[in-house]
Length: 103
Image 1 (cartoon, rainbow, N blue to C red):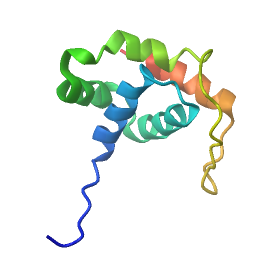
Image 2 (cartoon, rainbow, N blue to C red):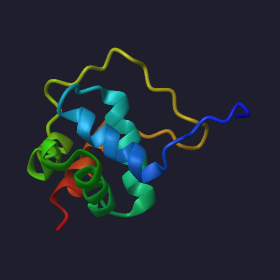
Image 3 (cartoon, rainbow, N blue to C red):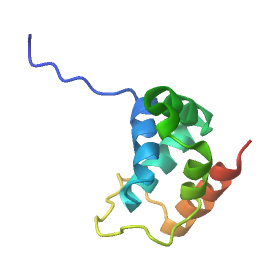
C-alpha cells in the first residue's frame, strides 16, 4: 500500500468536466475542456466516456449547448496558462462553439 494516488485518464477527466458544466459553469473548466478537445481532436470520446460513467445523468445535447453558451460562466478563478499556451478567451469561445457543432 505505498503512497500511490490514482489519477483518472485524460478522457475520464474530460468526462467529469463535461458533466460538471451542467452543475457549475466555471471558466477554468471550459479552458481545460478546450485544451483536452484540441488534443483529442474531437468531442466524441468525451461524450462516449461521459455516457459510460454517468449514464442517463449525462445529456449530450445539453453538453453541446453548454460548450457554446457563455452568459452565466463564473470567471472568478483566474486561469494561468503555461508558457507557450496562452490564448484569448474569445478564441477559446470560438473553438468551443465549433467543437459543439461537430457531427
